[in-house]
Length: 308
Image 1 (cartoon, helix red, strand yellow):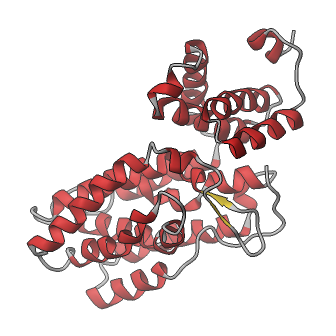
Image 2 (tube, one colour):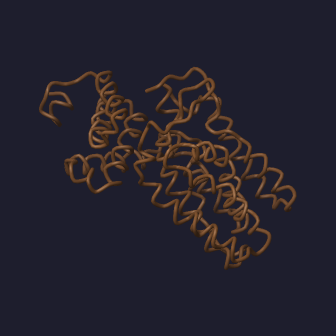
Image 3 (spheres, helix red, strand yellow):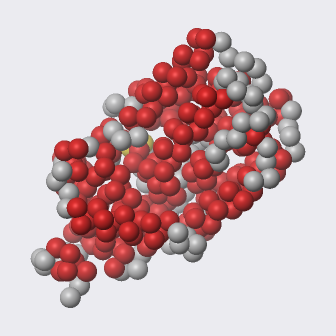
């Protein structure tokens, strides 16, 4: 008996049919149906041995199911348990490129002091600036326009104390950011950005690798840092590999994403940033790189690509 006959007790649908149903449910904004289809599609990919896409859709299922009480109430509890088991298995799988990069960055960060970790994080956060400004034009995401100013304050605080008005600004932005991580505006795949030569970027591509949660945690750390000694304070570096935007490339392309030129270029930036901050750059050197990254567009254009 196939995976789907075991799990759902009904005639097995083709993957193409499930993906078509998903697009239709997404268009209708039927988030309960979307959530269930994420599980079905993730399970199908897993049964076919495509674990990259399985992980992507199971993460989407898990995130969407837990984001709203009225969705969670309509989801089979066994599905939640099974998805959690599979996700935990994938998170520990050392054969996954994104896991390898995560572990590598964690190892590298152990050699950095607090100030150098903050610099590495800020260089990472700078690469989200253009993307978030574009996202701020979409329905329900206008608050992201404040990211630019908040990021400026966080970066300046590395070299000077901020004033009360600046502290209030970043605190307010932090309060707005947390509910965004579980919002239906984020889950709405109609909230997408066209790419000149690639498949459109869905805002929900940002949930992979706990990207938004990692950004929120870092912003919380940096907000607390405004009143602490900057060289001594230890911040997490979990967000560093999130600029790979693995979910976008996994969703829109086939094969191993480590072979995608844009992913290779971003991996190079990540490792080069480590070497850069290890050399304790001065203020001018830091902001030269920081400002260059703020103008960078992620995800980078890649071809060929197709909607999945």
